[in-house]
Length: 131
Ligand SMILES: [Zn+2]
Image (tube, rainbow, N blue to C red):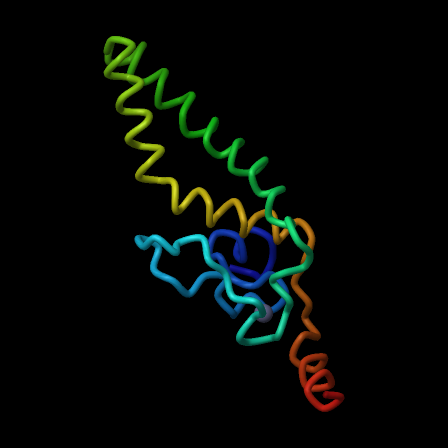
């Protein structure tokens, strides 16, 4: 896959270099949302400003709706389940997917503002030489 929005978002990698991971903690841990301060590969700052990732809640909302509405239609109209079992299944699915939704939302949000830079290696060497 070519470097860009979708590759970086789906692989949850640094949008600038498409190599460094945004998250190093295991997905299934209490620290699933913790990010590095900088990219370990290209040095991209992951803490652009305080509250930057609050905007990821908009992406998270869209993903949650995109999962919930079709699943609800399948369970309620397709399988004919009652309201309570449908709600129980939806809540369970969303709780199970929560860590992944949080991470993919942050990755997408970050990709809206930071883009792949084909010159990142040369610029990183210059940054390191100037330090
Ligand atoms: Zn990077």
